[in-house]
Amino acid sequence: MALTHVGTHPPVSGVSGWVARWAGSIVPGGTVLDLACGSGRHARRLAALGYRVEAVDVDASCLTALARTPGILTRCLDLEGEAWPYQDVLFDAIVVTNYLHRPLLPKIAAALAPGAVLIYETFRTGNESYGKPSSPAFLLHPGELLAFAHQAGLLVTAFEDGFSANPKPSMLQRLCAVKPPLLSPERGRLE
Ligand SMILES: C[S@@+](CC[C@H](N)C(=O)[O-])C[C@H]1O[C@@H](n2cnc3c(N)ncnc32)[C@H](O)[C@@H]1O
Image 1 (cartoon, protein in one colour):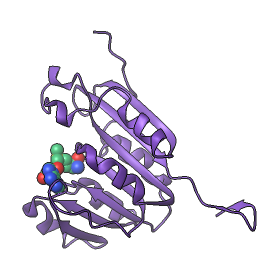
Image 2 (tube, rainbow, N blue to C red):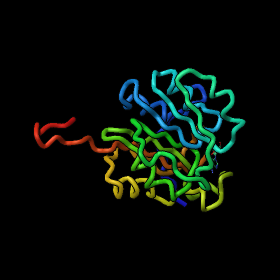
Image 3 (tube, rainbow, N blue to C red):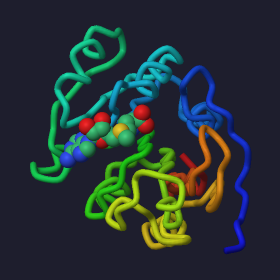
Image 4 (cartoon, rainbow, N blue to C red):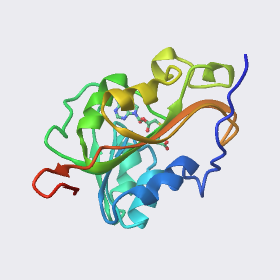
């Protein structure tokens, strides 16, 4: 199989290089939703950068220490079995890494405020040759996040899809996309 090598984004102190690269495009002091946050490596980094982070995971043990971190609100939630609680909430950014539950994708897009940033990085098909995850349910199809972003009306800032040597040999897909800002018809300018 011919491999497309994606960009090198070495992790920065355990943080995904992709997240580190695009975090600066989030509005200063904005609200960030870290979905399936795990140990909270990204929630912590984003809070340290001055963002107000809501960190969500089904595993309560991940959240205990995180809940004591200034700037982080934790929520123990089964994203696949419980109701989506952000029906009426908008975030300035949503970060998802190493997690995929396809039914959430439209909900994620809907929870982005105008001008908000979606930073997504997870595994794609072909990763089964390198290790876990290997189940098709957890692996993106080629171009899947790009197609999702277009369908959701997001503006794609960057997209990568293929073999990555960092943080370990794997098949990854990475997206950074922005919800279009509102156009004010009265003033004819972007807000
Ligand atoms: C591979 S870890 C990734 C953690 C983090 N995003 C990171 O990259 O460091 C996947 C995370 O998804 C969480 N997870 C799995 N199923 C979930 C569900 N149904 N609802 C919420 N979180 C879930 C797990 O508890 C785990 O923390």
